[in-house]
Structure formats: C-alpha cells, structure tokens
Amino acid sequence: MDWLIKKVLAAPKLTNPLGDENMTFAQILCKIGDWLIQIGAPVAVLMVLVGAFQIMTSGGEPEKLNKGKKTILWTVVGYGILLLGWGIAEIIANVLGGNAETVCPK
Image (cartoon, rainbow, N blue to C red):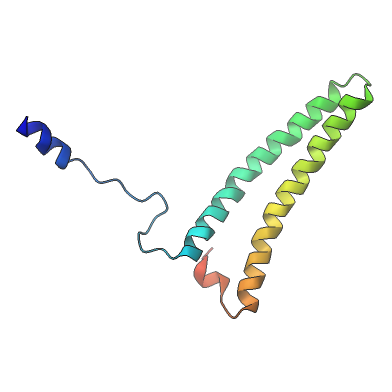
C-alpha cells in the first residue's frame, strides 16, 4: 500500500492551461478573448456553410429559404460582434489611460 501512496504523491503536477500562474484578471480576459476569436472563426465558417446548404435544399419553399438567409445573417452579426467587442475593449483601455498592448500583447 505504501508504494501506491508514493506513486500518487510522485505524480507529475498539472500545469495551468492559461499559462502563468501570476496572471491578472485582465490578462485572463485577454486569453479568453483570443480563444473565442480563434474558435469563433471556424464556427462562423461552418454556420455559413449550413445556411448555404439550407438555401440550396430549400426547393423554392420561402420558409426554408428565409431560414437559410437568417442563419447566414446571424452568423455574420455574431462574429462581427465578437470582433467589434475586442476592438471596443482596446479603445476603452486606451481612453481610460491604460495600454491594451501591455495587458494583451500580440
């Protein structure tokens, strides 16, 4: 039983997936924002393809055609909000006297 306890205690430590353990709240938000933009782009492309598929398979039915158009429209709006939100956050940081580049280095 002692060997099992020694093995468990000698297990490798888990690393922080966000990076440094001494990160500020603003730096954590920057990491999350970067992650959202990186994940959002492929999701947006996929949803545009879904909307296009809905349009192509509508068979002339106005309801299905409008559903495909709305899928594409709201995908573009959602990704646009994601990108604008990131830019607005940087503008607010600069207006308030901070420097977005020091908090979120590119």
